[in-house]
Image (tube, rainbow, N blue to C red):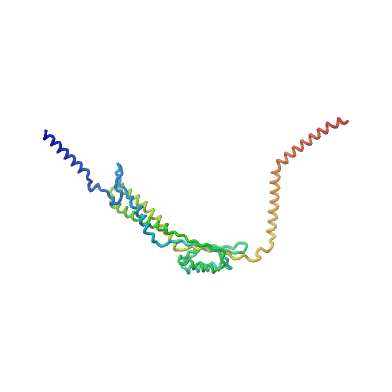
Length: 293
């Protein structure tokens, strides 16, 4: 009896040891992702999880480090000038832009029937020469109005830089994971994530390039107009008078036609009532005549 009990205990011990050995992971079963990332596999799916941690923490850390970043200011201005020679001032504005290391972004000019020429010139000037350029532009004519704006985009720029750094770090991690991936499923999943991160990186870098362009080069819109010539409205144009007379005549005809058709129902009703009245009056007159005889 004792020997049988001893055999049973020994058999149970062997089974327990076997279960413990089977529960230990082998080297081939180790996940391909590096420590610090989420390595738990979804239940029953057998797919390898992708790194999802540390991104938000990285963004927060980089945002805190960006507190000492220099200010990012977008400077814009618009100014209206009255000048004696629009064409000459446009040439001077181009010269000012070249002198400051900038350029004319766009320009347009016109000469309306009143004889008062006008033009609009948009200058892109390095931000450090913004104030001196505005002084030079004011000296070209009489200032009628002006607006100066300074938009602070430092917070947006720092946030974009932090996200870009986090995404680039994530891209590096995915590249390392791709080198360790062995199954087709893992390779495809990692490739999808790499493409997603790359799209985000390109979007953020594009926005940052746009902000850099606006920050480095200020935008100044200059509107030019010559004063209206004295006596420009003096004169007589018979053709214009004749055309105005024809237009007035046609307008009168239109008004008469509209008034006629508007009052037509009233005219018809009034005519019918008047006809009935005349008919009844005749009948009454016919009845009275025999009695009077």
